[in-house]
Length: 413
Image 1 (cartoon, rainbow, N blue to C red):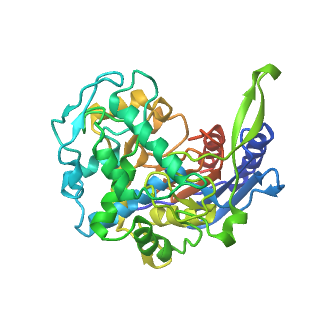
Image 2 (cartoon, rainbow, N blue to C red):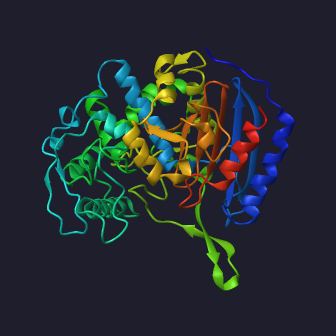
């Protein structure tokens, strides 16, 4: 049973100063926030610019690169196939992508490690829970061999998608390349954020017989009316695409911040987003607007349905909010993601497991995720509360603007 609670909307007046301070202090060029309660919009706020050089303000129709907020969409796509009996969480990955049959592992430090046969295969659930052993590359010279090879693959993808790149490495080919790279730990024994969702995208293609973009468009975007969500931005919509900026502290001026334009590819995602990519990244590739992503999030808050179109069954959506890592994996997650204390991670989502341990005000079972450029989503089934924030600042994830805004929102209930 879903409950609804009174909300003191007058308290939301505190949101605009938070956003304005964030942009005034040059933490981001611009950002916006949209909040729904009980299926109704209760507030929209924006601040700053989508394009500083052109003087274009950040607005509701600004198109943003979602990066890791692509992952919840990929999770829903997988759940659609699970509901239809075409995909099984407990199945071995190699049953769908045979190249993963002879999985190798290398836990030794450095590039000279010797891969050996993994003791157990990757399961589909490992992809959804980031327990596959694949990462986002090497963080130091001491990183295991597979992480160095993953960094090399990401560099190849960036070159392939750069301006003038060949744009020829497909989603399926990325999975094949990863299958030849040794994982950094035995699947299912540890947590490490990485390219699991991109492999899952290839699984969705294999099971559905469709490109990932086609499956998402036909099964999610078209039914929900998400007309501005895709793996690239068409020519007529390009003027609405936000620029990306770095927020840089200048310690020669006492830590004063300034914004620098960022125009490089990252994780194989093109900067201009101006062509249909060969690599449709299930972990990072989508663009969208705040209203489009709210339709997706509202569908989840409504138990899988929006405006008469059912995407998932209600029990499946409740499963998303109830799923938890097992205790051993939870301990590893807590160690590696201390900023998400009180949360678990399942189905490519953070899930509030122990609200009293969280560093934000929340509700047990609240779930969502964020992205490299700062977009953020929260879905709360019990309070029927949904909010989406977007921005385009490098190396963001969950920002202080997101935390402060959500504390205002939750303290209004």
